[in-house]
Amino acid sequence: MINKDQWLLESDSANFCLNKWQKTVGLMAELYDAPVGLIIQANRQGFQYTASNFGNRGPYPAGMTYAPDANVFAKAVVESGETLYVADAQADPRWSDNPEVVEEGFCSFLGMPILWPDGTAFGCICVMDHSITAYGDAFMRLMVQLRDLIEQDLQLWDQFELMREMALKDHPDDMYNAQGLSTLGQSCMQFARRYGFDIGVIGVSVEGLSRSEDDSYEKALATIGETIQTRLRGSDVVARMRDDSFVVVALANSPEEIELLSQRLQEAVDTLGEAYSLSCTQQFYPLDKAPNVEAMLSGAAAVA
Image (tube, rainbow, N blue to C red; front, side):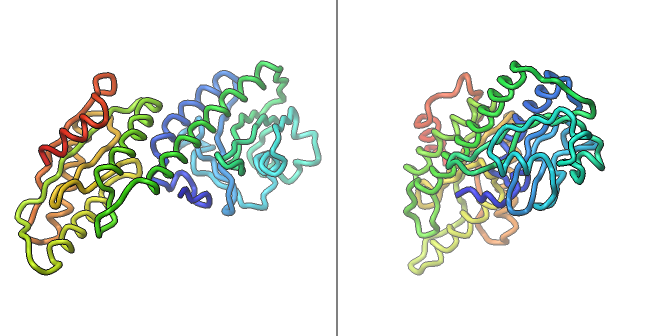
């Protein structure tokens, strides 16, 4: 379940869409000839610039926040649920205490609401300018299209998180089983196609772990599984396949990224100071050459 009161910038599982949003607002600012393009998230903590054409630097970086009671433009958009266009805020007394106007010197604002898949308010997408503007109908229609793309991303993310909850688990350590991994693997492929990632699959086998008549064997595997999970990103998926093997599916940009992830998993288990260790076999699949999900996972399970 997505925690809507958490900033997306603090969520590992949202990383896959943030880079895309960064490019979107950059292009939007260029098309509108505006100094600032933003995607703003609203929640109980206030209002945060989730994506900014300035990136993480500059005068209006991603991560910049305003308090819940601040009279900012985004608050008006979220509360009304409607498009807001202010051509000259300096001449409108409604914005006399708006910090974006008073402190930052903005004069124009055009923003549209962004909704979560359940219809509740996520925030808004907007452009701001220090000069008076006169945006025509074409600019309004353009922002509708950009807003719809962001809402589609939120829909896909919501579906992925729902898949996580529904995917089958049947081990004592509550890890995904083979069926659960297959289901989530399909979602990973959807993410990869939409956001331009490739796919990495890691087969993980545990060496040096002996079976015992008591529950120490299962406890050790549970500890290993938990340790693996702590080294994964929010968009990565791990499942326990056989008694002593796991498979990890990860979005990636290069074979080196998957190699590094394998090393992190091995090093993490080594720090447990036990007699066992991990052996990892990784495969990297450029998305345009990737086989189907079942083929990838069965190949990884075979070598794990």
